Amino acid sequence: MRGFVIIIGFDGLGWLLHEGAGVPLPSHVLGLLLLTLALFTRLIKLEWVETAATVLTRHMMLFFVPLLAGVSVFIPMLSTAWPAIAVSLIAGTSAVTLLTGLAMRLLIGGHKEVKASHEQQHSVF
Image 1 (cartoon, rainbow, N blue to C red):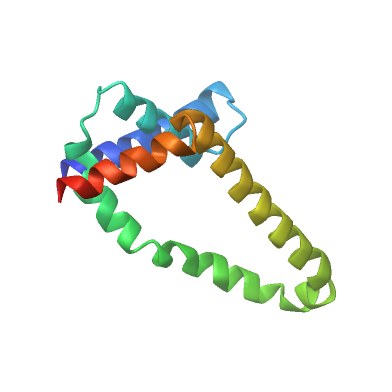
Image 2: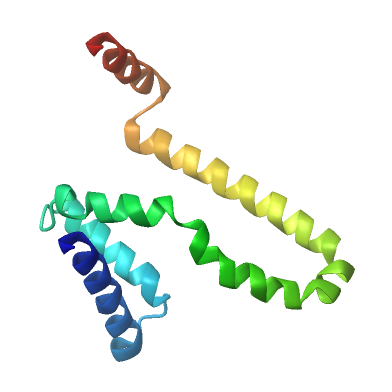
């Protein structure tokens, strides 16, 4: 229960920043950024939110049901613009995957160190 309260509290804090201070990011993104910052600074312990976050991510598909229902309304429009949609989906997904990989390589420090770390994890077991 504490984990859900913390997650909802940070979501509300993000909403307050978005609506009150006019921060030009979606309120949920602001809440997640603040929660991530609180976790990195150890203001919030991972154990406090881990169970609630696991439950939420396990049932994440339920959050997409309203989106999918909304998309079905636009099927006639989507059928005429499908090439542009397909190209943007493939290009966007490729760009995000590539940039995430590059960022991880920069943050971790290269492929060799990742491999060494991965080998250490296997040697423990």
